[in-house]
Structure formats: structure tokens, C-alpha cells
Image (cartoon, rainbow, N blue to C red; front, side, top):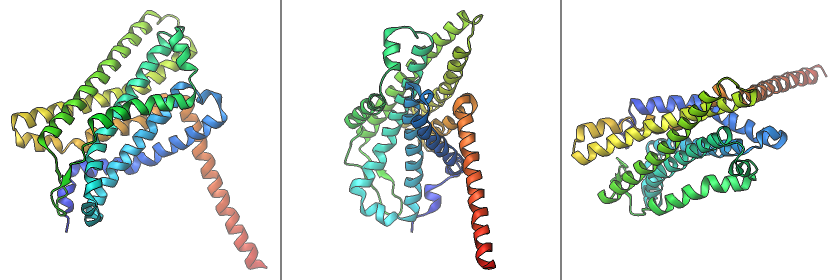
Length: 313
């Protein structure tokens, strides 16, 4: 019998509480954005193409981690029986989606810099004209190639059906962590430089803000908060690696308890930044939600009227 206490602590409770609240909101935003891209040209831009891919990565990452933790408790025998595939899959996916989401934040931030600071450069104009399929490839392929090179260890196993703890070669763990920290550091550095250059440009142009520029700056704020979440995850990875190297097992166990929040924060913050700073998309999401609610009410009323009519007949 697998112990729930062995797989869940208070940070997992917070994670699943946020998951239950945020996932429906994020899914609603995602569905609304998909519909808008079919009907409105304003949402067919490079920024929204990147945002769509990043939202998909967030939703998959949140859902996969939730499925992993729940399956360990509900179907441990099945998980342990398929460990040749599932143990490496769960272990490697942890790093895969950190890299993919981190890469996504960097791409969105670079795009903000090009649109605001270098809007008339040929590179910026070319990027703005990219077709959707090219943006999809640009978002997923480089990160996935990187992941397949560094995070494809097939030797990971579980210790027992009761614990389902990963057994990983120490050299693999060290390499995986160092590579992840390095990638996060580079991504954070790129985001920091891009944001600093945007701030410098904005301060120089503060006397002549046009409405289009104000809109682009709000979208920059939308992207900057996930960058902050990325910094939090980087600090978590650095401290976890430091305590592991120094053999401080007490602190290592303590800080690892915060992994669900450090990892989840990178995805949980995105829908709030969209609703706070992306006025165009927020308005459409509200209309979409209200329209669906009105339709549901109308359907319910129609059903009741039909039942009453049948009874009268």
C-alpha cells in the first residue's frame, strides 16, 4: 500500500489547490485564443503565436506533474510494472518542460525587445511576418533537440512499488542539474538584458508615448512576470544543487519540499499576467465566458420548456 503522506506534503496541497483554480482559467484562455486566431487578424501575430505555444507548454507541464503525483497513489502497481518506460519518462520530463518553458519565456522577451526597441529593423519586420508553422517549429524544435541530447537517460528506475522513488546514477543527476542551471542562467541573462534595454528605450521616449506603444509595453509586463518566476526556479535549482554537493542532507530535503511551488510558479503566474496586462485578450475571454454561460442558461430553459410542453400534451 502506497502512503499518501510519502508523496504529498503541504507544498503539494498548495500546488493542487492552485491547479484546481488556475487550470480551468488557463484552459479557457487557451480555447478562446485558438478561436480568436481563426477569426481576428489582431490575434494572428507572432506574439500571439508564441503565446499560444507557451500556454500549451504550461498546461501540459502542470497537467503532467499533477498526473504523476496522483498516479503514484492511485495506480502504483501499474506505474511500477511499467517502470522501464515510465520512470525515465517522468524523470526526464521534469527537465524537458523546464527547458521548454524557459526557452519560451526567452523567446517572448526577445520578441518584446525587437518590437519595441528595434521595430524598424529588417529582422524585426521579418519575424513579425513569420507564418504560424514556422513559429511553432521555432518554439518547440530547438528546445526539444536540446532536451533529447541532455535528458534522455533510459536507466532511471523506481526503488519499490511502495515508495516509487527514482534511482538515478549520481553522475546523471549532477549533469542534469548543472545543464538545467546553465540553461536557466542563460535564459534569465537574455531576459534581463532585453528588459533593461526596453526600460532604457522607454525612459528616453517617455514624453511621446503613443497608444500602440502603450499596448506593447503592457504586453511586455505580461512577459516580465514569468521571467521573475524563472528567476525563482533558478534560485531553487542553485540552492538544491549546492546543498547536494556539500552533503547538507537536512537542508536538501527541506528545500526539495518546495519544488512543486518553484516549478508550478513558472506556469501558474501566466494566466494572471494575461488577465492583468493583456486587455485585448482579457475582453475577449470575458465575452467568451459570458456567451457560454448565456448559452448554457438558454439550453437549460429550453429543456425545461420542452419537458413542460410534453407533460401538457
